[in-house]
Length: 279
Image 1 (spheres, one colour):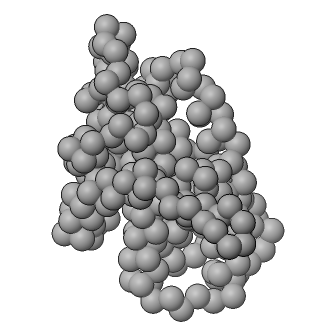
Image 2 (cartoon, helix red, strand yellow):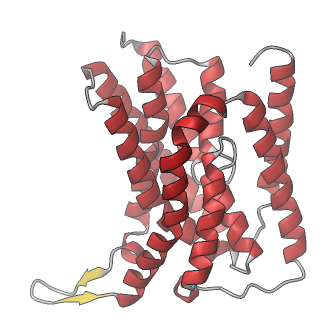
């Protein structure tokens, strides 16, 4: 591929889109595919498919950096002594349990979904369906009190159920964070805990998916491809830091309905563009 200013600006824009949409429950993959319809990268299809997944590592690294104290189970008091946080280990064990359903489904059906479901119609439909789900669930939750208000209170059963909902995110336009948050809210988990557990889940899921995509690609990057991949990840990292701070502050005082309405509006727009033959 030829590396020029236009291609660099495209990658920066895609990194911004990824950093914003990875953590808001509005589907990062869906947005990336939509943007690509109008702002196509001058790369091979194989590299583009890999890029759209691996760029998400930048967003994941932002979570690791920002939640390091909550995610890292070893705390060093000084040079000679350290402390093991059993509660953090417990959360990671629950993350492993929650990842099992999604890992199995991805291994079995990822190629089929890549080939048949990455279409504007599917993305638009899932945006609308889960947007309506957010609005319905938040209205329903007004009459309910969350049963789980701390991350440490999550049970293995609850983690597994959230993992089942995460399976839905393999369909483009669903949103991995959106699917897990919807599942968590349905079974009585508070918004803040639902978001935090989504952050934990994202780490092994995205590292695993990225490893699979890179292995499929062959790890044979040209200098230009490697530069583009690193640039996209770096931009996604920086933008994600600000978006995560915004989201955690926002959901302490507000619900997720605004994201539901946004999803519905975007889904209708995509249907319209597809009907007009623009997408």
